[in-house]
Length: 166
Image 1: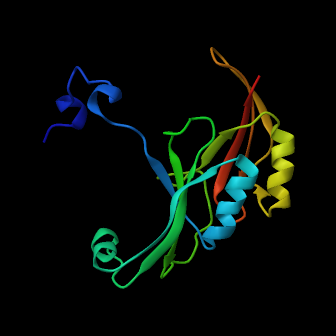
Image 2: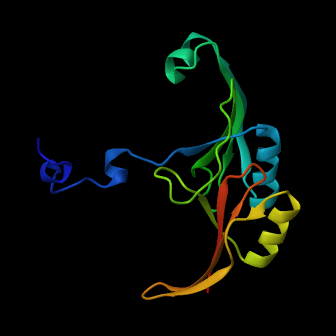
Image 3: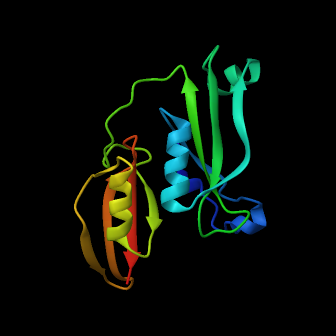
């Protein structure tokens, strides 16, 4: 069997030419309304479209969660305009137990937001019930610049990176 790199095309069309566009990232919540309020208030995300309340045969077929349901809403992420990607915050029923957040588990690890004042945004997240996940550091990245950043968690324990280039 050939490896994927051995069969990959040498000329890949640009995403615009292929019609591909990043759409959204899903964040599963214990309390979707509270987590939505956090991302709206702290990061300026904007609710878009309608609230979702999905259940029934199509939901069962899509998710493999027979007899389940999901509620939630999409939030437009800041800085990308009207057609920019969204953060989809959904609450499933039934729900699996939450696992502790870690950065080194294969799969998605964190959401990152560029902010004008890392210390002020950190304080705001702490007021909402988030916590520090690591320590505030400043790095000199050759060819890119100076970056101040910290990993934190949102109120439900999802890892969020705050960053500022200067």
